[in-house]
Amino acid sequence: MDLRGIGSTSYLSNLESAGKTAETSKPQGKDGFKDALLDSIKSVEAARSEADESVARMALGKGEDIHKVMIALEKADISFQLMVQVRNKVVGAYEEIMRMGV
Image 1: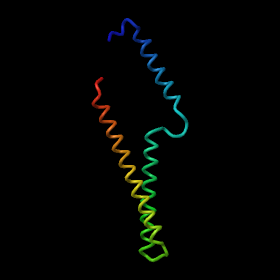
Image 2: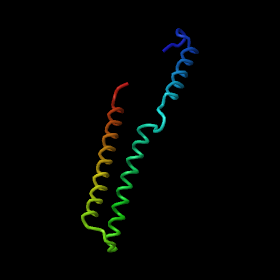
Image 3: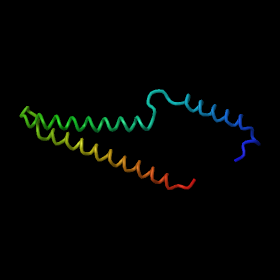
Image 4: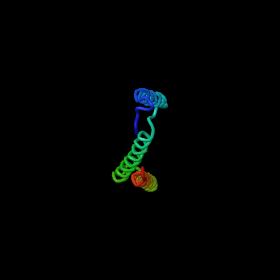
């Protein structure tokens, strides 16, 4: 593309100002998808940690009921399975985008 006809300096300044506008228009707080993924990974890790602690308390005979231990284990397992499926969907979407023609 030949930028001489449209004034390359004004074109570049328009791109720069558009980039600055996009940077300042970010919502306050969370940055987006990355933070949502990190939060969900942390919650999966917390569920796994809770299940491990529950199993350890039961094994040491500290009054932990078997049904509470099984519930904690299943919560951790389902959370992990969900995280894996979300990861698979994200990877699939990325692969689909990479196959697209420009």
